[in-house]
Length: 418
Image (cartoon, rainbow, N blue to C red; front, side, top):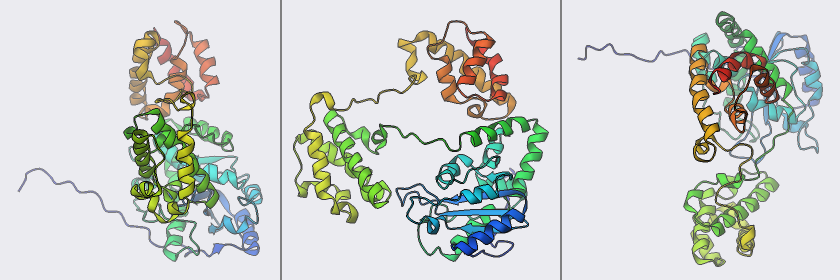
C-alpha cells in the first residue's frame, strides 16, 4: 500500500428539490400580473437566469426566464407565449417592477443579450461569475462556486437541452428553478470575500460597466464563415469562395426556419465539397453532392438546389472577387506577427505583457480581468516612443478601461514602455 496519503474529492449534498416546490410556469396574462405583484412585494435583490436553445435554434433568445426574490418565491416565466406577433416578448413592465432592485446573474454577459431583446434590462446587477474571477477563484462555473461557498452541488444535466421544446418536462423545470434557488446566498458569500480582499470597488465598477453596455447591439464579424470547421483542408481561393457561398446560403435558410446552422447542414459537408470543387473546378452533380454525407441528411436534402446554386455562384466569381486566404484584420494585428514588420511595437509588448502578468499574479486575479488583452493590443500598437501617465490615462479611458484598471496598470505601462 502506498505511503502517500490518498486524496479524494469532497462529496457535497446535491440540491434536488426547490424549497418551495416546483413553480407552475407563468404563461398567462393573469399569472404574469400576479408574478409582478409578488415580485414588487418581495425584498432584497432578485436572482435571474435564462435558458436558451443554442445548438437547436438559430435564435439566441430566451425560452425560459427564472426569477427568485425573498418574500416572493421562484418564478419560471415562458416569454415565448407573450410574443404575440413580435420576434420577442416585451417585458418592460417586469423591468419597471424590478427597476430599483439589484439583479443577481451568473455570467451576466451571456444572459444580458437575450434579456435585452425582451426589454428586460437592469439598473444595477451583481455578477457572481465575474466576482469570483476578480477574487482569483480557479473554478468559476456555478456548480463549483456553490460547492466552494455553500457546500452544495447542482445538477447540470439539462444545461445544453433544447429549451424551445414545449411542454417543458418536469425535471427540466426542477433544474431551472434550482439555478436561482441559492444565488442570493452565493452573492452574500462573494460580497464578504470581496470585502476581505479589498476588491469590492473593482467589482462594482465592473458591474456598472456591464449595466451601461447591456443594451449594446451585437456586431457579428463579416467573416464568420472563416470559422467553419475543416477550413484548414481548403487550400485555394476558389475553395474558400465555395465555403463562403455555402455558409451564407445555410445561414439564410437557418434564420428562415429557426434552426441552428449545424442542424441544417454540418460544417464538414461544406468544407468537404469545397475540396472537391477546388480540384475539379466544375459544378458537382446531385449524386456527387450527396457523396458528402451531410448533404444527404433530412433537412439539407430539401435544399439541394440551393446548395448547387451557391456553388455555381462561387464558380462564376471573377478572380478579383475571390476571398483572400487570410481575413482582413480589423484593428491592430495580433502581437505574434509584430516582430518583423513592427519591431518597436513588438519590443514594447514583450516588456509590458510579462509585467502585467506578474502584476495580476500579485493581485490574485486573471490578467485578462486586470486589463483586457484587446485594450493592451490597441494601446501598444502604433503608439508613441514615450508615454507619460497623463497620455496613458487618456488613452485607456478612451479604450473603456475602468478606473480601478487604470489605477493599477498605468504604473506598469509607464515603467516598461521603453
